[in-house]
Image (cartoon, rainbow, N blue to C red):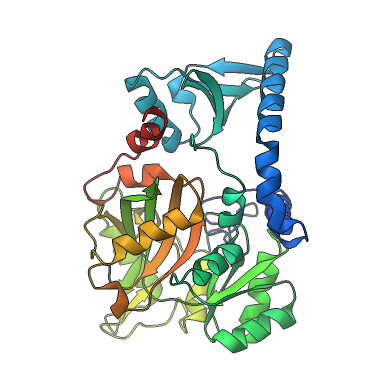
Length: 390
């Protein structure tokens, strides 16, 4: 059962984008850290900070003179809820903030006047860092850095060929295959255990990145832990859309019944080729009858927009997790970081279960914490602007 059109990519899911653009960006970012000068990029970045700042100001003024760049005060033209939250808080604090428009079209770039200077930022006004953003967005580099410092991460390996991927799968067992650099879960293949599925997964990943990450499959819900200046502020746990077998109905029929009974805000479950492949890798076909009492996740994409759920815990998780997460945030060198973490039970001690950090996001979607299905919303924008006004 599939509802894709000829232009819809099921592997990209709700975050549709040009494969060529993704491949170029993701591959270039990964290659930067793979070349011999990779270890020195931090030094180069620091040396270039003043230069790029100067060039950015010059390009900005020239663009304005030519009419290519204009500034907008229209709050409704923001490209994301993340930007809206930041703009609302800037207005409350009297921080002048304007959206940069290119050829009349809105961008996710802004200019603000803070600390007596004009500053530019994309998406989130971060404090100056070196190359931490690039490095932490690289899934393999991130895991190596975390593992070397003793933080829990799944075993992983960077691969380019099928032979390398097969060796990694033989070493790790059940694996998840994903682009080494990328976002929004695009072209991610969990529960890969056969060579046929591995070949399919690697071919899909290669559409959006020249390098793949093959990593140990972890079990549990997906959590987004967002830290500002090394302090855990928001912890959003997301559950996968799941059906429970009754011994009579097929998976397709169970999905139909679940959609009919879903509450407001929960998205409809639409089975795509991505869902079908995921279920097949877990040993199920959509026309199979699910045994009574069997709970089956339908996709690796979690959250209520996908037909699942989420809950904002804030810091109300088992206290043993908090110092580990905050130490990891400080270790990244990022002033704002969102971790994707797989945890079976957020209410149980961290040392009693197999859990791990799977990704770090240098520009996290802070708005996710502001609109959970369950739990108290958390607005992270004040914490971000606090960094600039302390």
